[in-house]
Image (tube, rainbow, N blue to C red):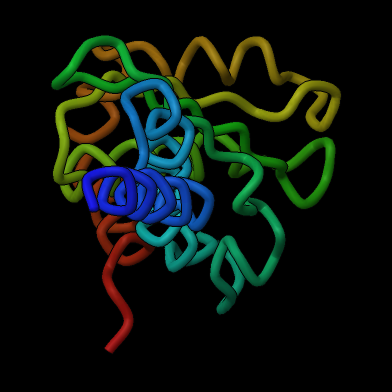
Length: 160
């Protein structure tokens, strides 16, 4: 009887493990990071383009694959966004990066460090823009400008 019980227990744990319902530490890690990345994507996909009536998702400025989440420690995460402007000379790329930053700073439900970049090779001044949108002082100064703040607010406003 004891052997049957042990075999049944082993079989059940094996079935649960294979189905993904029972995971151990390191095996759970990638799944948690994927879930967090999807959570981030769900927040940014509805941001409106500053010029067009479309969302960043509709314009393919952001996609699920542009979001990466890495664990820094048990409570902190590094969120990396790589967005693609619609054209290589997009004059609003910095504003789009600012919208991404503002929305995530306001809405992410977990502690995070945020890095936002233009996808490599997709903009003529990507290096300069990457510096701007990852500089806390420049971001704070930009958000003090009432005209710029209003544009950002309109872009990050959740659709009804």
